Length: 286
Image (cartoon, rainbow, N blue to C red; front, side, top):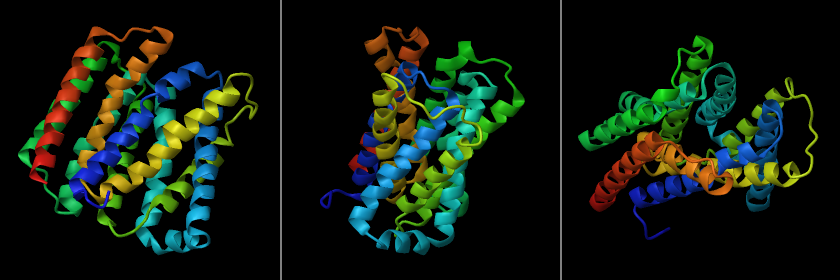
C-alpha cells in the first residue's frame, strides 16, 4: 500500500469493501431471523469483533484515538448510527425499490456537501458518472417504484444523506482515525435495536449465517469504508457502492436460482462500465 498513490489506495479500499458487501442480500435472504433481531446482531457482532481487534492492536490507545477524534468523531458516530437504523426502518415503511433509489442519491449528495464544506468541487467527468449511475439505478428499480409511505421514503433519503455526511466528515479529518467512532456507532445501533427486538435466539443455520454475514458483509466493509474517504473524495467512495446494486442480485441468482431482471442486468452493465471508465481515468491521472 505504501507504493500506491492516494487515488489508488482509496479506490482499492472502496472496491474491496463493496466486494465484501455484495453477498449481504443473499445471506439476509438465507437467514430466518426477524428484522430487529438482524439489526441487533448487525450492530453487536461487528462492534465486539472490531472492538476486540482494535484493543489487541492499539490497547488502551483505542480510547485515546476515540477521544482525540473530537467533533469529527462525534459527527461520525451520530451519522453512522442514524444511517444504519434509518435504512432498515425505511425498508419497513416503504417499497424496497424506493429506499434503494433514495440511497443511490448518496454520491450526488456527497459531491454537493464536499463542494460546500471542503471546497472539493468534482470535475465534469465525476458529475457525469454520478448522473449516469443514478439514472441506471432508477432504471433498474423503475418497475418496482411505487407511491410509498412518505415517512419511509423520507427515511431512505436520510440514510443517503447520512452516508454522504459520514464520508465528507472522514474526508475532512484525513489525519484522524475514525474507525473507533464507527465502532461506537455500531454499539449504539445494537442498543437501539434492543428496544424492538423480539428474540435473541439463533437457531440451526442462522447460528452460522448471521455471524458470517455480520463479520464479512458488515464488520470488514465498515472499517474499509471508514478509511477510504481519507484518500479519495467522498462522492467517489459512494459511487463504488452502486456496484452492490448489480453484483448482489447475481449472488442470489447463483445460489438460490432467483434470476435478476433484464433491467437489473442492463442497468448493472451501465453502472459497471461507468465506474470502470471513471476509475480508469482518475487512476491514470494519479
